[in-house]
Image 1 (cartoon, rainbow, N blue to C red):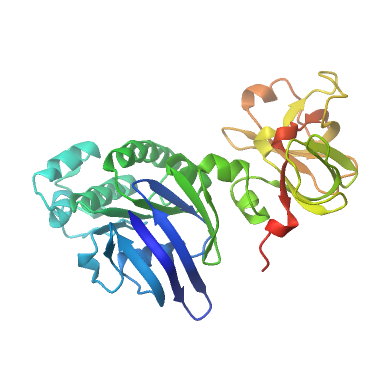
Image 2 (image 1 turned 30 degrees about the horizontal axis):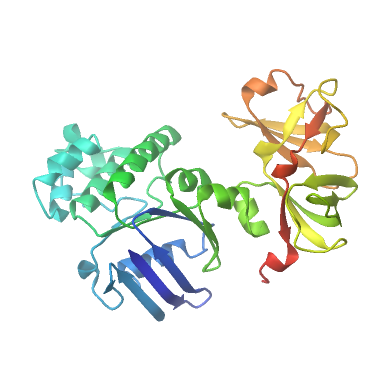
Amino acid sequence: MLELSSLSKRYAEFAFGPLDLTVRNEVLSVLGPSGSGKTTLLSLIAGTAEPDGGTISLNGRRLDGRPIADRETGLVFQDGALFPHLTARENITYAATDPDRVDELAATFELADLLDRRPPTLSGGERQRVALARTLAADPAALLLDEPLSSLDAPIRRRLRDELHALFTDLDIPIVYVTHDQRTATALGDRLAVIRDGTIEQLGTPSDVVSHPETPFVASFTGTENVFAATVTGSTDGTTVRIGELALRSTETAETATGSTVTACIHPARLQLTPTDSGDAGATNTVSGVVEQWLNEGTDYRVSISVEGVAESLTATVRPAAVDGLSIDPGSPLRLTIPPDAVHLISSSAIPMD
C-alpha cells in the first residue's frame, strides 16, 4: 500500500498539494491537463524530487529522504529512457533482480525476436515494451507510469492498453498511471483521480467520476461537453431546471432551493437523436433542434445542435449505424431527447473557488 500524507512541493510559479492519498494494490489513473501536477506526483514518489512537506510510505516503510535506488519503485517514462548502446536484452537484464525472468518478460511483451536489437532500431511501441519489461524485471513494490503510451500511434496504443490491463491485474501492487488521455485513464484504472493545480479535484471509480462529476472542470475534462449554468425551478420527484428557455427534468435532487443556480451536465453520449417525424414529441425532455455542424471522429459522429431559447449549442455523439437513419447535414431539423437520469446537477457550493 502506498500512502501519501500532507505531501507538498512548491516551485516558483506552482504549488503542489498538500495532498493525502492512499493507493492499495490497484491501478490509480491520474488524469489532468499539462501543468496540473501529474509528473510532480510521480517524481516525489520515485525520489527524483524531494517534497517540501509531508510523508510517503510504501507498505509501511517511509520513502521520503531515501535514495532512488532504495525505494523499490519502478518508474516508466513517456520516452522509455532506454540505454541506446545496449541491446533490448541487456537493457532488461541491467535491472533484473533475477536474470531468469528476462526471457519470461520478453515473452509477455512479445519481445523474443527483438532482444538482440538496440533501441535506435526499434519502433516506438517496441521501445516502450522493452522499457516496461526492464522496469518489471526489477520486481518493484510499486509501479509508476508517466504517460508511456502518449507518443505511440493509435493502433499500437490500443493494443498495449489491452495488454497492460491484463498485466496490471496480475501484478497486485500499487500502480500509479498518469495521463491526459481520458480513454486510457478509464480503461486501465480501478480508480480515477482528476488533478488540477496540484490538488485532486475528484477521486472515485472511473464510471462514477465520469457519470457524476463533482465540479464543472471534472465534467468537461472527462468528456461532458454539455455544461450549462441552470436555474432550479422545481423539486418534486427530482428537480426541474431551466437552461435559457429550455426546461429539463432531472432524476437527481438538487441540494439548493428553487431559484438557485446550479451547473447542469449532460454527457454527449446520453443525448438521443431521432428524425422529427418519429417518437413522441411530448416525451419528457424531448425538444426540436437544428444541426449546426458534424464531425466524423471515426468511432462516432460528433454533432452540434442548436435548440431555440438556448444560447449555447448542445453536442451529441452518435454511432455510425444510428447516423444512417438521420439527416445530420447542417440546417437539418431533428428531435433531441435527454433522459432525466442523464441530467447531472452540481450545486454552486460544490464548486471550488479559484
